[in-house]
Image (cartoon, rainbow, N blue to C red; front, side, top):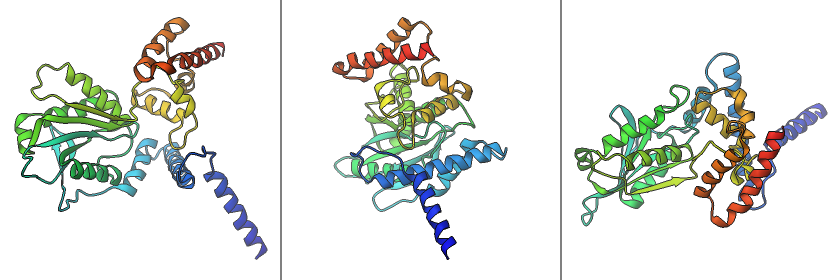
Length: 313
């Protein structure tokens, strides 16, 4: 009996040690975040073991775990019609909001899910429920794109998939089929999906052949640059739960079909110009696009210190 109690106490202590991570006091429901982080770390370690044993690529194994626990079929409700189809060979899930007599043509959102270009799906519960809510509340047609993922394809194939599917959707006859107003179409995405949405928005702005144009771009915590991994945001979230900096860098390496040997060099920005002044000028231009003007001076001081330190190493 005593040995069982000692063993149980030891297991509880080990579990608590694995789950617990220090979090800022401002985080609501810290134990929920800790449990989610521990679950994701556990799934990553299992997938890494599968990769090490030569059974499957670690990203395929990890995504299999994610999709297995979260996949949801295309289920329609009284308010929202949900269908799985394909646009020019790219799988999509379409959510059609309820028709309104006073609004015969609906607004539309083309949505691109996140997941480091390698994980998640338009067909998992989280994105299905998000798109269902948008379709109902906005009285909109939501097109959620199931683009191909790493390691089955690499950059720039993910961009090609979302461009191809969106161009197909913007055809006049397709917009008419879904009763979409061609003047009210938005592109949106989160994380890596925000990256793809931004790339698509840039391409479509320059494409004179498109008759229907995107009216709005809504990017949710988008991944917008791989030039500098020591911005204030990266420094502040270097050990953030679920997505610490080194994991984000590894997603970039995977996306470009690179080598993990470069991860440490990228973290200290040795993947950019060895000319300190040239590198600083490039980073200043990238920062000016993302930070308010009153934050730029202190940010450049931080970057200068990080740059000097990394070159000294």
